[in-house]
Length: 267
Image (tube, rainbow, N blue to C red; front, side, top):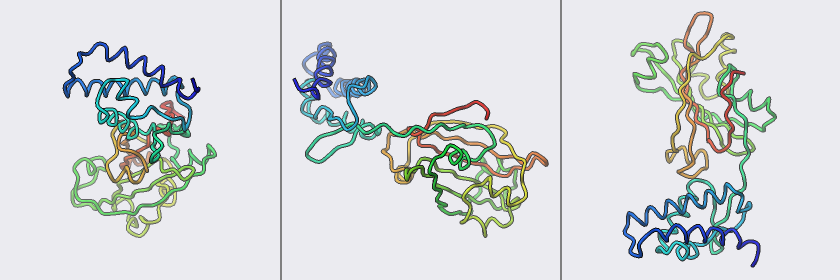
């Protein structure tokens, strides 16, 4: 038996054991359960190293036969793996395992900017300023900035890429009362920390950070060049000027989770 068929043979054995617990007639709910189990089995096979980079995956027909289900259900399982970023397809040739992604160590704490962290680690970082815009009143944002409803608040967005791969989106909210020249400068800011220094703020820290997981919107998916089921790590925090306790910014940092190893300890 050719070596490239061995992973599928092991997978077929697992499939046979799994489907033996189900009756012959399968309803929609049962088919959905089998699809889910198929995805789990394939993820376990990837984790064990059964498939090599660019190695061929079982076809829709092979999976359908192994699990005794319609081909459309096997296709749904494979499409889910594509949406999760594990496999890719080639027209007329099948589906294959994607190469392992670059893993970047990222400290989520500390007073060093993302740009400085990436550059000090030797990564080829590029930052694209996506522009700035005045935002309508938002109770949460205004509260975080400690400003009144009559104040003007602007949003500045930057997209960071390492080795030409977009991996982080930084969205900063700042008050014009703190940065009077923000309308002049907003389009040119690459690093907020560097901008603080230019404006005379040298000592700053974060009060607290909130971490959550989300999945990309259509806009984020386009920016990150990722599938819809690739998880994003979202970190929301503030930045305080320590000498006078002024809030410099409220920020939302969105990281493409599959490119990072996260470190929570203080730097």
